[in-house]
Image (cartoon, rainbow, N blue to C red; front, side, top):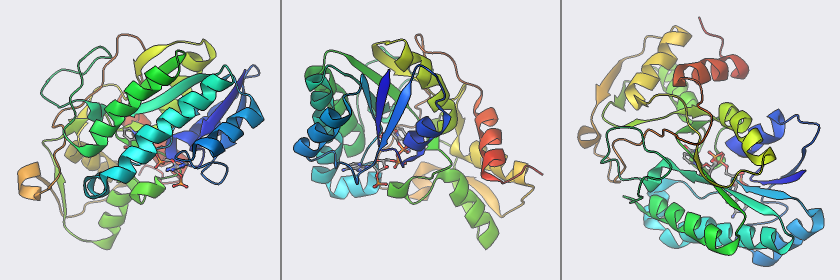
Length: 284
Ligand SMILES: NC(=O)c1ccc[n+]([C@@H]2O[C@H](COP(=O)([O-])OP(=O)(O)OC[C@H]3O[C@@H](n4cnc5c(N)ncnc54)[C@H](OP(=O)(O)O)[C@@H]3O)[C@@H](O)[C@H]2O)c1
């Protein structure tokens, strides 16, 4: 089986390329340099050139504040880009695996969101990802949608300037007061764990929607606290609320992902421990 990964230098894309070692699966890595997903002709040429069995689209425009200011770019990269990839895959008889997000949900639920729960986005990015899911389904009957949450990976996200773990460690070393929201609960997930859980889904040709996220949820405050604890750091660190923080952007206050279809991932603390070890931030 030949699998073409778009967004191969991103957090999730690079972990798929790094961690998939299956004798039956050949992984081909593609970055923006090979094809910008908004360019339908370039995407089609890339896919035709490799003739994969499966195309995984990990690309995204997911800088949320910028998306509110520039919805056109957010929709062009996510929705038009997702459609371009799904169509190009169909043209060569390949399946599409589209990565999506917990932000398709509104956070009103207080138990983990399951694959079949109804979607209602609170911001431009979430709305664009709902539309992406829909156009991908329309464009290619062989579709798989994988929703993930709160990603951090060794590569760091170029589009977001790193990841939450690195930001917390940097702030702690700078000695500044750190205030982190304790009222937003999600599933911070190490992309390595997602990459490994995704392999059997792709290899077995499973179709439909899957949630792949760390077991149990936590607030960003709890997550940050564990980072500092494991690194033996004691910064000036306290909880805040979304209202106090004054964030202008609406976000779901609860977006923990559960699943009835996918393999359960380890507890979030296990993924964090692995990240700190692999990144060389040895636990103290
Ligand atoms: N990060 C999160 O917390 C989070 C949470 C939930 C869901 N997700 C979803 O998970 C997926 C992977 O996220 P991630 O954190 O791994 O992302 P990431 O590290 O930011 O990587 C995204 C990749 O997309 C590429 N890209 C962006 N625009 C492109 C374009 N127009 N054409 C071609 N490539 C383009 C980027 O290339 P460059 O490096 O060249 O910019 C980058 O390699 C995305 O679908 C995202 O929506 C992420």
